[in-house]
Length: 395
Image 1 (cartoon, rainbow, N blue to C red):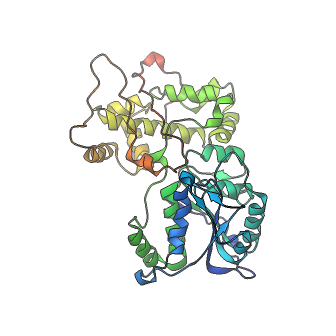
Image 2: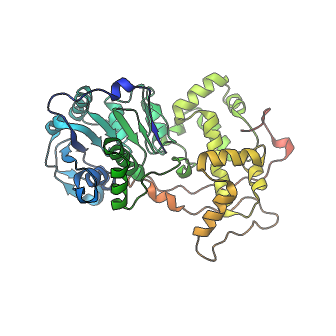
Image 3: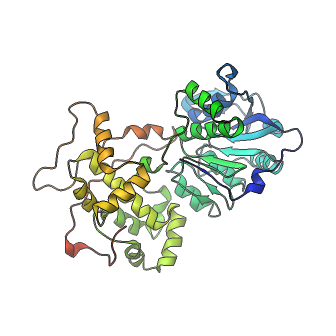
C-alpha cells in the first residue's frame, strides 16, 4: 500500500523552472548498484509503448560519478549522459545506492538539490532513499525504504520520518519506495499521477504486474535485528523481547528492563529501530503467528496464546490490519500454495516449539543487494501464569 501525503501541497504545486520538462525523466546511476533496481525506471520510462496506450516519456540515463559503472555480476555500464543532463529533467530517479554506510558523491548531491530547488520531482527507489536523505531532501518528510534498511535510515537521518510499513510514500515532490517490486509500484504510481488510471493499467498489463498492490511491507518483515543494534544498550532488551514473545508483556515492561522511563525508552527505541516500540512489538507477535500458522496445526486460539496475545480476538484484529487476511484464511491460502505432501505435522507429544521455517516465496522480493534470509528461531514454550512479567495485558 502506498501513502500519498497531503502535508505539503505547496511543494507539490511548484512549477518547473528553466529548461526542465515534465515528460523528461533522468535516471541517476552509480557504480556498485544492483542491476535489477536500476533497470526498473529504465524499463518503465525508457520504452515507447504508445501503441498500448501508454504516453511516452523521454529518458535520460545519467552517470552519478566517473565510469565505467560496475553493477551486479561484474557487468560494466557506460551511461550516455552525465550529471549536467539532469538540468533538463522534470523527474529525477535514483534507483539504488551501493552502500547504506558510505556517503554518495557530493557532485551528485548538489545536482539533486538543484533539481529539487528548480521544481523537479525527486524519486528514490529502495536504497536510493539514502541518497535523497544525504542530500537533505527528506528532512522533516515521511519516507520509506526496504524494511531491512529502514532502522539504519532512521538512525542515520533522525529528521526523516521513516515508515518501514509502506510500499511507497508520495510526499508531493519527493517520493520513496521499498524494495525491488515496490519500485515498480512507485513507477506505476507516477504514471498514474501523470496520465491517469488507464495509462497505468495499460503499462501494468505490459509488465504483467498488478496495477495496484494492497498491503504494505509487514508481510515481508524478518525478525533479524539491525546490524547496528549490537553495540547499543537496548540490544539486550530487544533480544529478550524476541525470545519471550510467547509471554504477555507490554512496553512498560521493556522500559523497566532497560531502566528507563517510558518516554525515554520510546525515543531511544524509535531512533534505534525506526519504529515505535508498541508497533514493533505488535508486528513481531503477528510475524510469530504467521510462522505458527505456516508450520504447525495449532488452532488459532492456541496460536494467539503462543504469540502473547491476550485473546484470539486481539490476534485476529492485528493480523487482519497488518496482512489483510484472517489467520484462518492466511493458513488456508498458504497451504494451498504448497506442494502436495508438505503439510506441516503437529509437534510430537512432550516437545515444545516448531520446526524451522523455510524461506517464504515473498523473500524473493528483497533487493539483490540484501543479506541472505535469516534462519528463524524456534517458538518458545507456552507460558505459565507465574512466568508473566508484565502488569498490563499484551497488545
